[in-house]
Image (tube, rainbow, N blue to C red; front, top):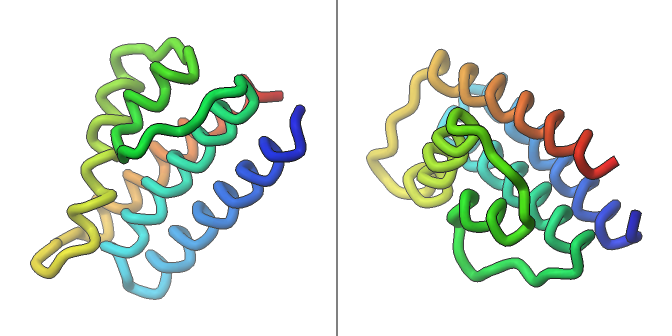
Length: 120
């Protein structure tokens, strides 16, 4: 594995840890943002490992396509939903329930574990 890939994985892990901490502290919208960021950074790891440059977008499905990652329909739907949190969570009026973000955290965790196994 390339050193740059390992670095992206570390950053993804930090972002996911931040999401967990933020939800615990009552900042659901920030936790949602960091779930999206964790997935984005792990996809950057996959792109880096494959010698590709990340696109200038937050569309995680596009990133997966560029990294030649075959997604199930369920994973594609998840990444589409997760991509929306890159913008939605950062603007006034974003409303998230604790339950919604706990579910998002669990889905993100499963995706990260799956993708990490592919990178190993």
